[in-house]
Each structure stands twice: as C-alpha cells, then as structure tokens.
Amino acid sequence: MNPRFVALATVLDVVVLVGLGVGVFFAPLTLVWAFEDGFSTELLSSWAVAVQGWFLGHGVPLAVSLPLELSESLGLGVSGQNFRVDVALLGIALVTLLWGYRIGAREGTKKHPILTWFLAVGMMVGLSFLLVFFLPTGSVSIDLVDALVRPAVFLAAGLALATWAGPDTAGRELIRERFPQWLSAIVRTGFAAGIAALLAMVGVAAVVVSILLVVSFAPVISLYESLQPGAYGIIALSIGQLALLPTVVVWVFSWLVGPGFTLGTGAVVSPLGTSTDALPALPLAGILPEEAPAGALAVIAVPIGVAFAMGLLSRSRLMGANRGGLWRGEGTPFVEQPATMAVLAAALSSLVASAGALILTELARGELGPGRFSEVGPDPWSVALWWGAQVFVGVVLGLLSGGLAEKRVSARR
Image (tube, rainbow, N blue to C red; front, side):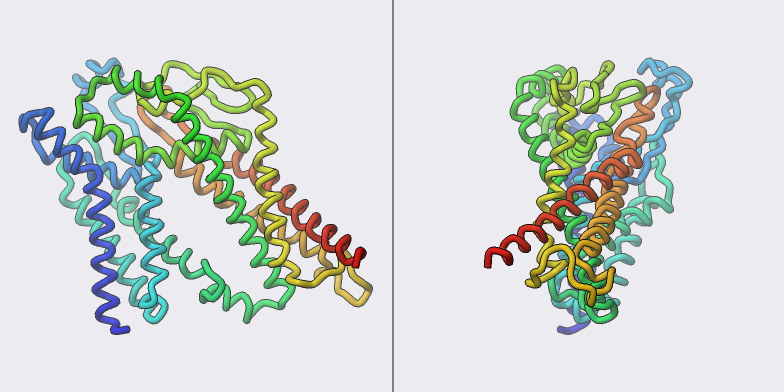
C-alpha cells in the first residue's frame, strides 16, 4: 500500500475524530444558542464549553475560577470561587480509544506502523494544541501539558491494543518467538483471562445500569422536568449525560466489586451501606438507590463467578489439547506442572485485571465541583485490591477445575 495514501488516511482519520468529538457538544449547544437564547449570547461561549467538554472527556482537569459576585450569588462564597472538575466523561475517551484501534487494525498500519503511529499521535497533539491556543478566555482554564498528553494517550492506547488483539498480531508473534513454550502459555493465558474478566465485569455493570434506567424511568423524567431545560436544552443535557454514562458504568462496577463509590464527602454508595446527602438535580441521579438492597453484600460473588468463567474458558490457552490432570510425572519441571502454571497464570491475570480497574477508576473519580463535591467516585486502590483478589480466586479455580474435568474424562476413557 502506498505510504502517501496511508499518511493521508491517518491524518484525515484524526481530524474527523477530533471534529466529531468537539462537534457532539457544539451542535446541541448551537441549537440552544439559536432557539432557546435567541442569538442573545455569544456563540464563542458555546464553542468554549464544547472544547472544554471534549478535553474533560479525556480526563483533562478543568480549573474553574468564578468571579466573587457570581460565586456569592450561587451560594458558594469566597471558598467556592476556585475549584476543579476532573471526573472524565469516559464516553468521549472510549470513542478515541476505539478510533485508535480502528486505525491500528488497518492493513496500511501493519505495513507502515512507524509512519502511522507518528502521524496519528502527532496530529492529535497538534490539534489539541490548536484547540487550547484558540480557546476563548473565560472562567475555565486548561493546563497545556495535560491537554496535549491525555487525548494522545487514549489514541495511542487504541493503536497499541490493535497490535496485541487477534491471533496473528505482532505482539503475540513476539511472545511466541522469544519466550519458552510454557512461559508463553502463562503470559497469553494470564493476559487473556485478566482482560476478558475486566471486560465481562464492565459489561455486567453496563447491563445493571441499563436495568436501573428502565426501572427508574419515572424519577429520571421527574428530574428532567424539574430542570425545565426546553426542547433543545434536553438534547444538550442528554448528550452530556451520554458522555457521562460510561463513567457511571465504572461507578457501578466498583459497587459490584465491593468498595462502592462516593458522591461527595460523607455520601457513600456501596453494598455495605448507602448514605447519600442532597445531590444535584442531574437526571442520571434518579437511578441511585436510597439505601442498599437487602443481601447486597452477596453481590461480590458475581465478580468471582465472572472470573471463574473466564478461567474455565482460558484453560485451552494454558495447556492446549494436552490432558493428564493437574500434576504430571517426575520428568516434568515444577514450573511446567499444570497446577503451577495455573497459579502463575491466575496471578498474572489478577495483576492485569486490577491494573485495568485501577486506570478506569482513577479516570472516573476526582472533583466535580466546590465544597463536598471535591471527592466523587470510587477509591482506585480499594477497587483494585478487591477486584485483584476476586480475579485470582475465580481464575485459579476455573483453570484448576478445567484440569480436574479433563482428568475425569481421561479416566473414563
């Protein structure tokens, strides 16, 4: 494939990605400006909010500095003049990650990887710089380094993921060639089980959020009505909440794992107990329970069950078609014994899954405003420790159970 065509396609891909990301905020805000505000406000203010929303979607902190008069009129006082908002709208980051994966999975990228990586990441950095440089001055400021690095990291993560995903990618070929067979099997099984368990658990959390939205339809609509945003305001508010929805999924993930999350100082939502204070009238808040359901602590069995299933499904990666139970004869080295390999693979899967959870929860926590909303979201280290332990137990039981099942089948034959 012609490298010039690959370069052009990569540049256009990144331009379209950034344009869509900013446009998804700017388009509804333009409708509000035209039909709700009657062209009475400055359109540049809507553009600034759209750019800030796009950066916040990648976890770039927004430093807010309100005039004293506005702070006092909002009841925040002098102490509420300056605050940060850094809870990522992960829906935007997810689009960037998947877009990077799409670029990395193309045939042209496989033939010209250095060219594609350089242009994609460099173009993202350049466009981020232009957005910050031409951002209208106001009460919100963005750190230039964060703005240049964080969106590019999500794009690069998608490119890197495309390098490893699939049976014939460069990363997996490297493991097969450089590692001994037993170590290659442990690494492949550990990564596969850990990533699969994390994705499956996030999927379970997404299903729970969907069910809560259906069950709590009336409270959500009531909150919409209480805000009285108007037709185009509803569109803008809904798009903002769609961008926030993956963040809420991560919060529910932390609830299913056990530690739960906070919605401000002293407001905790977890299976161990729920205590919420007055919350902002955001329609998504309508799905929150007033108290923990009876027997909610039993929900921590779900992550172990998910990890067990992923361990059971990963058994063939570890041992292939070989049978013979969990322990072989004296001629087999200790590290190549099926039981030893299962424990090592489970330990690696635990590290991989907990690292993924740590990253997700770190992005989904932070400050959401002044006062008690300076602490919102899950505690990353608590979630990582709980989740890592659950994955290790579930995966090792799944791998060992697979070995026991194969041993029984061999005995019957």
